[in-house]
Image (cartoon, rainbow, N blue to C red; front, side, top):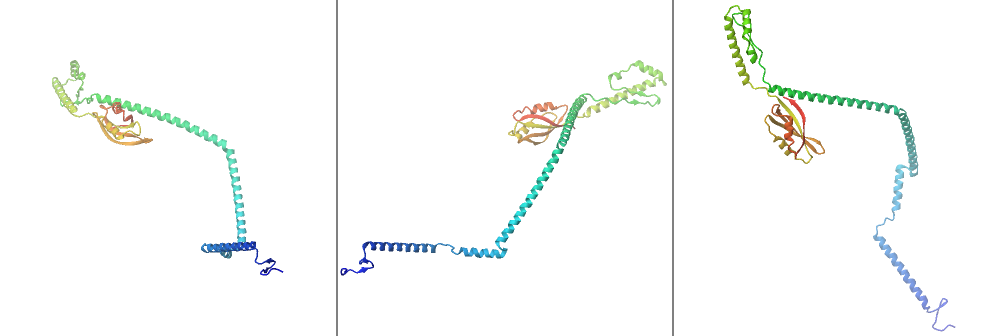
Length: 329
């Protein structure tokens, strides 16, 4: 017999032992924690924007495109076949191109040495012709320079020499038509003719005696008067002045030279018979420009050597002076 006041609990006694109560409380606490966690997760997912039914929409999209373009398996197979045929065609074309290139290279190598020899011979022939032409051009330039120097010397010599006297004039007297008296020139040697020769000539053709002597004196007076008038006219008439047009190339030292100042220095050269003309700047290279200036000179008063010396005196600006063109006016 169990004691009164004590009831049974299954195989255990009532009240249950303290250890069983502790386990029950632990299980309850664990369940409560799990419920709280699930609730928190549900609340979190409720606030999150997650597309739970995306697979349905993907399936509907796949079916739509299959209806539009046919099944995916057949189209992919057909595309693969088309790609394979395209690749095969490209390979065949590449083989043909390689064969053609090999055939062309073989033909060029077979005919190459002969063509190269011919080309080299033609090049050597052209170089020889070019050298000959250069020598001919150099000879022509030298000949032209010599001719110009000789012409300048002749012009200077003729400008210093006196003008020639006109040829002698013949006066025919009225009394004797058959007789012609030749007047001598203006030179002193011809003026002083021997009296004996005149007498001999008069004896040979003397038809009227003393009348011829009077006519000779009159002819001499007429000759002297005409010569005097001609000399006066010749003295009043100005002589021909020989002039030349020169194109000068004035080169600076570098690209930092003041070209305006250099032109001012060049134009500051003043001489009797020198007139400066137009000018311009001509590019030479590497940013350097040369001054090309025109001038007109009188050959008797101004020479090219003197002009070059005067210009090259400005050593701070002028490196050299060359004659680009020289023409007679």
